Amino acid sequence: MELIKRALISVYDKTGLEKLLKVLSKFNVEIISSGGTFKKIKELGYEALEVSEYTGYPEMPGGLVKTLHPKIHGGILGDLLNQAQREYMEKFGIKPIDLIVVNLYPFENIASKEGVSFKEIIENIDIGGPAMIRAAAKASFLNERVTVVVDPSQYDLIIKELEQNNGEISLITKRKLAIEAFIKTWKYDEAIKEYLIKRFGVE
Image (cartoon, rainbow, N blue to C red; front, side):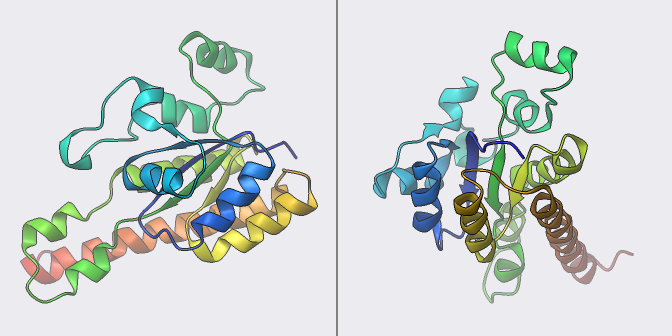
């Protein structure tokens, strides 16, 4: 097990965020965040580094592109035991990110509402979120360093492990959460597929 030193938090559903932040603060975990999540973290009285400040690229208007950047995905996927990868990360200022807390735009909820325009429905297809989730889930198996959390219902497990293991997450929990993360993105894409097939009649 390794200490959780840095977390990226980007959540649509902010339920339970404060209790998670409390324990992350206790273990001096650096927080990177963006958009509404960054603002919420600051409102709750916790420190965070904004994604745009970290990457050096401002958020695209409308929040279209925020986290799709090598300094984010390199920080998730990079293997610190691989000398070439570690040197690459150091050269380009890529910080290792050990914990990814992401939940997605509510595509299915929006798509099922009456009176919502097609444009608004498509705007609620999350791109950056699934990309980070999949990268983190892959990294959980690839380098066994990263923990991925995709639902507020998982916060209690994370909090319990951090408390019991002095700021670390067990490998068995990382793998369990990674599998749940892949299931989450699969179901998310399935909902998008079903909506578009129903609307346009294409198999």
